[in-house]
Image (cartoon, rainbow, N blue to C red; front, side, top):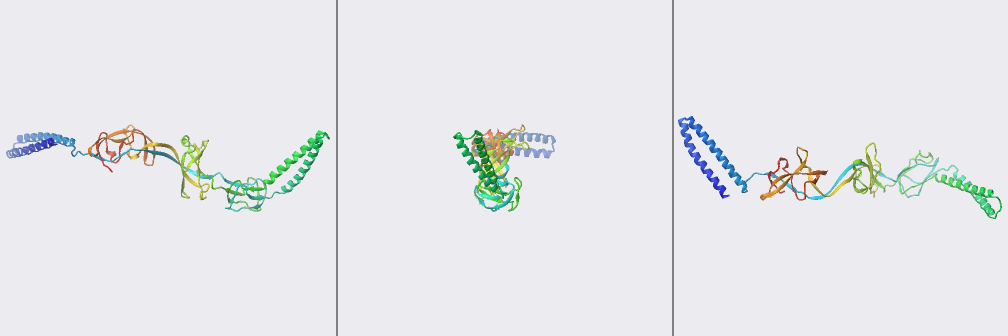
Length: 390
């Protein structure tokens, strides 16, 4: 440092002497109006200026080398860290329940009894409604009497046959009549059972379209709808490109805007069929509905985790740059110096999936690397910079 100061002082002394000599010579030349002397002095001054400029640059370099006031670009930087990264896809979903049944009659007749009302909770197996049997009950009673007679006849004929009394034909005929009477009674009981409507599961009577006294036609005139709101799920169609990434057990989140609910859940079922029209497959995610606010056919958004990296290096998208060949890179700080001085290095990186304003770096970076953030847009490789600590 002392050597630099001495050199600077010597240059200033030379400049001072040169200025004094030049002023005297210049005054004489101007007074004598001698053009040749003026041109000679101009050439001399130019040479002196060039020599002094070269010496000044040498001094500046020496000052910078010794830690003087070298001008550096100011930047900020952050150290890379590994963290859990989960990438999600989001699709539209529809809320459904498997226990949502609009019940139709299996027997043609008039609705004569309703044992429930809309909004009523019922248990599985509860009697809900009765249809006029149109005399089936009476026919069943007659068939039961015929069955008793056929049974008695068969039993007597069987005892006689065992004692080798009577013909085999008589025994077989009695047996056939008895079995035919049994089948007729069973069929009539099945017909009569169709006149009564029972709850297929625990649920709530949502609506009753039918009215007492109305004529019901099987498969055409509905009687009532029963819904169980405890077995809800979100159903969505997912593009086939995610077929191998989304499986049973994948983490999921269901957002239902109407009821202002967000539920963390998991995929409970994936479809085995690709819809040709839109190239999608079906997924289901279970939902909790303790207060019965969630209803079938509500719109929802289903977010599913399709990729997980437990030790991912994530960087902001704003620090990523691209060169002329299409390769992506970031600026990394190397060669640390005193007073937060560094040198920039252009590091080529391979990028993965992104989430919000962050993107995953697959290769090119290690944990603890210093990545240039603010000021990156004006940098070049091997540039001297100064890091501002935030």
